[in-house]
Length: 297
Image (cartoon, rainbow, N blue to C red; front, side):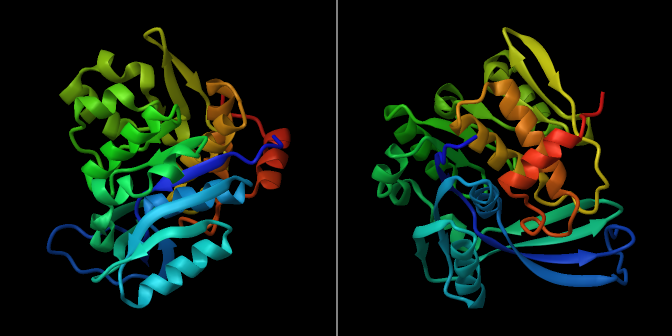
Protein backbone atom coordinates (compact mmCIF):
# COMPACT_ATOMS: atom_id res chain seq x y z
CA UNK A 1 0.00 0.00 0.00
CA UNK A 2 1.78 3.11 -1.27
CA UNK A 3 -0.87 5.80 -0.83
CA UNK A 4 -0.83 8.13 2.18
CA UNK A 5 -4.56 8.60 2.82
CA UNK A 6 -5.75 11.83 4.43
CA UNK A 7 -7.28 10.71 7.71
CA UNK A 8 -8.89 13.19 10.10
CA UNK A 9 -9.46 12.00 13.65
CA UNK A 10 -11.98 13.92 15.74
CA UNK A 11 -11.95 12.84 19.35
CA UNK A 12 -10.43 12.60 22.78
CA UNK A 13 -6.90 13.39 23.90
CA UNK A 14 -6.19 11.95 27.36
CA UNK A 15 -3.40 11.11 29.71
CA UNK A 16 -3.65 7.45 30.74
CA UNK A 17 -2.90 6.73 34.40
CA UNK A 18 -2.10 3.02 34.46
CA UNK A 19 -1.89 0.68 37.46
CA UNK A 20 -0.72 -2.94 37.12
CA UNK A 21 -2.17 -5.37 39.69
CA UNK A 22 -2.74 -9.09 40.21
CA UNK A 23 -6.49 -8.61 40.27
CA UNK A 24 -9.00 -5.82 39.75
CA UNK A 25 -10.35 -4.60 43.12
CA UNK A 26 -13.95 -5.25 44.04
CA UNK A 27 -16.26 -2.57 45.46
CA UNK A 28 -14.80 -1.24 48.73
CA UNK A 29 -11.60 -3.27 48.35
CA UNK A 30 -8.03 -1.88 48.52
CA UNK A 31 -5.20 -3.80 46.86
CA UNK A 32 -1.46 -3.29 46.54
CA UNK A 33 -0.44 -2.90 42.90
CA UNK A 34 2.86 -3.81 41.24
CA UNK A 35 3.49 -0.87 38.93
CA UNK A 36 2.22 2.61 37.95
CA UNK A 37 3.00 4.71 34.87
CA UNK A 38 1.49 7.41 32.67
CA UNK A 39 1.01 7.09 28.93
CA UNK A 40 -0.47 9.35 26.24
CA UNK A 41 -3.98 8.12 25.44
CA UNK A 42 -7.56 8.96 24.60
CA UNK A 43 -9.37 6.94 21.96
CA UNK A 44 -9.07 9.75 19.44
CA UNK A 45 -5.35 10.32 19.99
CA UNK A 46 -4.74 6.55 20.02
CA UNK A 47 -6.42 6.12 16.65
CA UNK A 48 -4.54 9.11 15.25
CA UNK A 49 -1.18 7.67 16.30
CA UNK A 50 -2.11 4.21 14.97
CA UNK A 51 -2.91 5.63 11.53
CA UNK A 52 0.13 7.95 11.50
CA UNK A 53 2.54 5.11 12.29
CA UNK A 54 1.19 3.27 9.27
CA UNK A 55 2.06 6.25 7.08
CA UNK A 56 -1.25 8.11 6.77
CA UNK A 57 -1.43 11.91 6.68
CA UNK A 58 -3.29 12.38 9.96
CA UNK A 59 -4.89 15.55 11.29
CA UNK A 60 -6.21 15.60 14.85
CA UNK A 61 -9.21 17.73 15.83
CA UNK A 62 -9.71 17.99 19.58
CA UNK A 63 -9.10 19.96 22.78
CA UNK A 64 -6.64 19.87 25.67
CA UNK A 65 -6.68 21.77 28.96
CA UNK A 66 -4.28 24.28 30.51
CA UNK A 67 -2.61 21.81 32.89
CA UNK A 68 0.72 20.00 32.82
CA UNK A 69 -0.64 17.16 30.68
CA UNK A 70 -1.61 19.37 27.73
CA UNK A 71 1.83 20.28 26.39
CA UNK A 72 3.14 16.77 26.93
CA UNK A 73 0.29 15.21 24.96
CA UNK A 74 0.37 17.66 22.05
CA UNK A 75 4.15 17.39 21.75
CA UNK A 76 3.82 13.61 21.70
CA UNK A 77 1.24 13.73 18.89
CA UNK A 78 3.48 16.05 16.89
CA UNK A 79 6.44 13.73 17.40
CA UNK A 80 4.34 10.83 16.12
CA UNK A 81 3.68 12.74 12.89
CA UNK A 82 0.12 13.86 13.68
CA UNK A 83 -0.85 17.38 12.54
CA UNK A 84 -1.95 19.17 15.74
CA UNK A 85 -2.86 22.51 14.11
CA UNK A 86 -6.52 21.88 14.98
CA UNK A 87 -6.00 20.88 18.61
CA UNK A 88 -7.31 23.75 20.74
CA UNK A 89 -6.16 24.55 24.30
CA UNK A 90 -9.04 25.48 26.63
CA UNK A 91 -9.37 26.48 30.27
CA UNK A 92 -9.65 23.47 32.58
CA UNK A 93 -8.23 19.98 32.89
CA UNK A 94 -7.03 17.76 30.10
CA UNK A 95 -8.91 14.47 29.76
CA UNK A 96 -7.70 11.51 31.79
CA UNK A 97 -8.27 7.76 31.83
CA UNK A 98 -7.55 5.67 34.92
CA UNK A 99 -6.71 2.16 33.77
CA UNK A 100 -6.31 -0.96 35.90
CA UNK A 101 -4.51 -3.79 34.09
CA UNK A 102 -4.81 -7.32 35.44
CA UNK A 103 -4.52 -10.80 33.93
CA UNK A 104 -4.16 -9.54 30.32
CA UNK A 105 -7.33 -7.45 30.62
CA UNK A 106 -8.27 -3.99 31.81
CA UNK A 107 -10.95 -1.75 33.29
CA UNK A 108 -11.06 1.98 32.54
CA UNK A 109 -12.58 5.16 34.02
CA UNK A 110 -12.52 8.19 31.69
CA UNK A 111 -12.87 11.79 32.91
CA UNK A 112 -13.46 13.86 29.72
CA UNK A 113 -12.21 17.28 30.87
CA UNK A 114 -11.27 19.41 27.85
CA UNK A 115 -12.73 16.82 25.48
CA UNK A 116 -16.18 18.20 26.34
CA UNK A 117 -15.27 21.32 24.35
CA UNK A 118 -15.40 19.40 21.07
CA UNK A 119 -18.91 20.72 20.44
CA UNK A 120 -20.93 21.06 17.26
CA UNK A 121 -19.79 24.68 16.89
CA UNK A 122 -16.15 23.72 17.33
CA UNK A 123 -16.48 20.94 14.76
CA UNK A 124 -18.30 23.28 12.36
CA UNK A 125 -15.28 25.60 12.52
CA UNK A 126 -13.22 22.71 11.11
CA UNK A 127 -15.56 22.08 8.15
CA UNK A 128 -12.87 22.60 5.53
CA UNK A 129 -10.52 20.14 7.23
CA UNK A 130 -13.21 17.47 7.35
CA UNK A 131 -14.22 18.05 3.73
CA UNK A 132 -10.59 17.64 2.63
CA UNK A 133 -10.28 14.14 4.10
CA UNK A 134 -10.39 10.65 2.64
CA UNK A 135 -11.73 9.18 5.90
CA UNK A 136 -12.88 10.65 9.22
CA UNK A 137 -12.62 8.61 12.43
CA UNK A 138 -14.74 9.39 15.50
CA UNK A 139 -15.48 7.94 18.94
CA UNK A 140 -17.85 8.82 21.79
CA UNK A 141 -15.45 10.37 24.32
CA UNK A 142 -16.49 13.79 23.00
CA UNK A 143 -20.00 15.34 23.02
CA UNK A 144 -22.48 13.53 20.81
CA UNK A 145 -23.42 16.82 19.14
CA UNK A 146 -19.85 17.12 17.90
CA UNK A 147 -19.92 13.58 16.52
CA UNK A 148 -23.22 14.24 14.78
CA UNK A 149 -21.96 17.47 13.20
CA UNK A 150 -18.76 15.83 11.98
CA UNK A 151 -20.64 12.97 10.31
CA UNK A 152 -23.07 15.47 8.77
CA UNK A 153 -20.22 17.54 7.26
CA UNK A 154 -18.39 14.44 6.03
CA UNK A 155 -21.53 13.05 4.41
CA UNK A 156 -22.24 16.34 2.65
CA UNK A 157 -18.75 16.20 1.15
CA UNK A 158 -18.68 12.51 0.21
CA UNK A 159 -16.14 11.60 2.91
CA UNK A 160 -16.30 8.14 4.49
CA UNK A 161 -16.71 7.97 8.27
CA UNK A 162 -15.81 5.37 10.88
CA UNK A 163 -17.52 5.67 14.26
CA UNK A 164 -16.10 3.62 17.10
CA UNK A 165 -19.14 3.72 19.45
CA UNK A 166 -17.29 3.74 22.76
CA UNK A 167 -18.22 4.42 25.45
CA UNK A 168 -21.59 3.21 24.23
CA UNK A 169 -24.68 5.42 24.30
CA UNK A 170 -27.93 5.73 22.37
CA UNK A 171 -27.20 7.09 18.91
CA UNK A 172 -29.64 9.39 17.08
CA UNK A 173 -31.12 8.24 13.79
CA UNK A 174 -29.17 10.87 11.87
CA UNK A 175 -25.87 9.29 12.88
CA UNK A 176 -27.01 5.76 12.06
CA UNK A 177 -28.29 6.85 8.67
CA UNK A 178 -25.22 8.84 7.65
CA UNK A 179 -22.21 7.06 9.16
CA UNK A 180 -20.35 4.73 6.80
CA UNK A 181 -19.06 2.19 9.33
CA UNK A 182 -19.67 1.39 13.01
CA UNK A 183 -16.94 -0.54 14.83
CA UNK A 184 -18.39 -1.77 18.15
CA UNK A 185 -17.10 -4.58 20.32
CA UNK A 186 -19.52 -7.32 21.32
CA UNK A 187 -20.83 -5.46 24.39
CA UNK A 188 -21.38 -2.27 22.41
CA UNK A 189 -23.03 -4.14 19.56
CA UNK A 190 -25.47 -5.85 21.93
CA UNK A 191 -26.46 -2.46 23.32
CA UNK A 192 -26.87 -0.93 19.87
CA UNK A 193 -28.92 -3.87 18.62
CA UNK A 194 -31.16 -3.81 21.71
CA UNK A 195 -31.92 -0.10 21.48
CA UNK A 196 -32.01 0.36 17.72
CA UNK A 197 -32.65 -3.03 16.17
CA UNK A 198 -30.14 -5.31 14.46
CA UNK A 199 -31.43 -4.67 10.95
CA UNK A 200 -30.98 -0.92 11.38
CA UNK A 201 -27.24 -1.21 11.99
CA UNK A 202 -26.04 -4.52 10.52
CA UNK A 203 -25.07 -3.15 7.13
CA UNK A 204 -22.72 -0.65 8.75
CA UNK A 205 -21.25 -2.80 11.52
CA UNK A 206 -17.70 -4.12 11.71
CA UNK A 207 -17.82 -6.14 14.92
CA UNK A 208 -14.55 -6.46 16.86
CA UNK A 209 -14.39 -9.60 18.99
CA UNK A 210 -10.88 -9.70 20.44
CA UNK A 211 -9.26 -13.11 20.06
CA UNK A 212 -12.27 -14.27 18.02
CA UNK A 213 -11.46 -11.83 15.26
CA UNK A 214 -13.77 -9.48 13.39
CA UNK A 215 -17.14 -9.92 11.74
CA UNK A 216 -19.09 -7.77 9.30
CA UNK A 217 -22.40 -8.14 7.54
CA UNK A 218 -23.20 -8.46 3.84
CA UNK A 219 -26.86 -8.69 2.85
CA UNK A 220 -27.76 -9.78 6.37
CA UNK A 221 -25.14 -12.55 6.48
CA UNK A 222 -22.35 -12.34 9.05
CA UNK A 223 -18.89 -12.90 7.58
CA UNK A 224 -16.06 -13.69 9.97
CA UNK A 225 -12.42 -12.62 9.72
CA UNK A 226 -10.23 -14.68 12.08
CA UNK A 227 -7.77 -13.11 14.51
CA UNK A 228 -4.01 -13.50 14.61
CA UNK A 229 -2.57 -15.49 17.49
CA UNK A 230 0.04 -13.52 19.45
CA UNK A 231 1.48 -13.44 22.97
CA UNK A 232 -0.71 -10.78 24.62
CA UNK A 233 0.80 -8.42 27.18
CA UNK A 234 -1.75 -5.58 27.31
CA UNK A 235 -5.01 -5.20 25.40
CA UNK A 236 -5.29 -1.44 26.12
CA UNK A 237 -5.63 0.37 22.79
CA UNK A 238 -6.07 -2.77 20.69
CA UNK A 239 -9.45 -1.62 19.40
CA UNK A 240 -8.04 1.83 18.64
CA UNK A 241 -5.17 0.22 16.74
CA UNK A 242 -7.67 -1.82 14.73
CA UNK A 243 -9.63 1.32 13.84
CA UNK A 244 -6.48 3.17 12.75
CA UNK A 245 -5.44 0.19 10.64
CA UNK A 246 -8.92 -0.20 9.16
CA UNK A 247 -9.02 3.46 8.15
CA UNK A 248 -5.54 3.30 6.62
CA UNK A 249 -6.41 0.20 4.61
CA UNK A 250 -9.76 1.54 3.40
CA UNK A 251 -8.05 4.81 2.49
CA UNK A 252 -5.70 2.79 0.30
CA UNK A 253 -8.62 1.26 -1.58
CA UNK A 254 -8.63 -2.21 -0.02
CA UNK A 255 -11.89 -4.14 0.11
CA UNK A 256 -13.70 -4.29 3.43
CA UNK A 257 -12.56 -7.88 3.95
CA UNK A 258 -8.90 -7.06 3.27
CA UNK A 259 -9.12 -3.91 5.38
CA UNK A 260 -10.47 -5.97 8.30
CA UNK A 261 -7.59 -8.43 7.95
CA UNK A 262 -5.14 -5.54 7.96
CA UNK A 263 -6.81 -3.97 10.98
CA UNK A 264 -6.66 -7.34 12.76
CA UNK A 265 -2.91 -7.48 12.23
CA UNK A 266 -2.43 -3.93 13.55
CA UNK A 267 -4.57 -4.70 16.59
CA UNK A 268 -2.79 -7.99 17.30
CA UNK A 269 0.67 -6.43 17.16
CA UNK A 270 -0.42 -3.63 19.50
CA UNK A 271 -1.23 -6.09 22.30
CA UNK A 272 2.33 -7.37 22.52
CA UNK A 273 3.59 -4.34 24.51
CA UNK A 274 2.35 -2.35 27.53
CA UNK A 275 0.58 0.93 26.83
CA UNK A 276 -2.08 2.00 24.37
CA UNK A 277 0.26 3.77 21.94
CA UNK A 278 3.69 2.28 22.69
CA UNK A 279 2.90 -0.99 20.99
CA UNK A 280 1.28 0.43 17.86
CA UNK A 281 3.15 -0.95 14.82
CA UNK A 282 4.57 0.67 11.69
CA UNK A 283 3.45 -0.24 8.18
CA UNK A 284 6.64 -2.25 7.67
CA UNK A 285 6.05 -4.23 10.86
CA UNK A 286 2.46 -5.00 9.87
CA UNK A 287 3.40 -6.14 6.38
CA UNK A 288 6.21 -8.36 7.69
CA UNK A 289 3.86 -9.83 10.29
CA UNK A 290 1.13 -10.59 7.73
CA UNK A 291 3.63 -12.33 5.48
CA UNK A 292 4.83 -14.70 8.19
CA UNK A 293 1.82 -15.19 10.47
CA UNK A 294 -1.43 -17.00 9.83
CA UNK A 295 -4.77 -16.16 11.35
CA UNK A 296 -6.41 -18.48 13.90
CA UNK A 297 -8.64 -20.87 12.03
